Length: 259
Image (tube, rainbow, N blue to C red; front, side, top):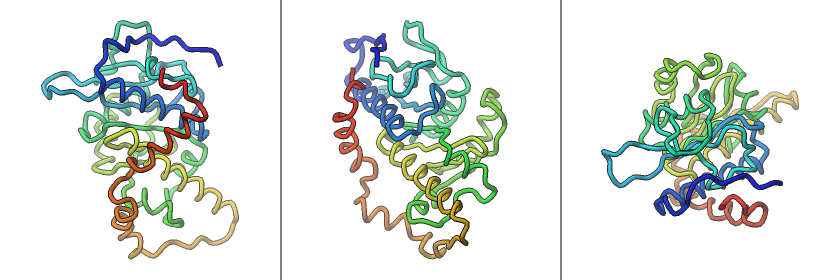
């Protein structure tokens, strides 16, 4: 694969921004590795940490036109909440993509990272009237914290933002009807774990439905207690537990993301 020019100057960035860029680039590469990318479409964004709460907020997102497997820490584009590129570089972003992400970032200060995908399984389940079904252990985790937003066309209308965030509420995962999946978290690691579990649940559901047999749902009392069980199993760690292992995996497979 040819090298993509890295247009941002590492020396001009804070250590916190550079660490975030590395994690976000890793997330893009991992999404490509798991086959969840959609050519140059869909997006992952992250809020840049800042010391001064009064300072403008900036975010990182992919440069429009790059495959996810090409994205590096330095090639990510810095934008403000309105999608204006703030770095002096000839890069563009997808306006439809940042409409969704900016809405979530603005409404949810806890959304350090937002991931939106168009996978076949995710879109298939989003198009089903019943949505995600509680038919597997994997499905129970997003099922207990899942929102839905009806399709309104390509996300170019700023007025849709208010409806989207109202539907999202305090949930960390969402099915965008007839469109795809979305997950957010305080960190890139947490958002990635959220989208991984949601995507795995959707893929499992489509496979189960393809068998043609009647499906058995998990009992409601078990569904109601699943989040507490998850906290016990992960010791409250969430993405923090799995992310170092994912980075080691990526280091073996595709270490160029750090440049």
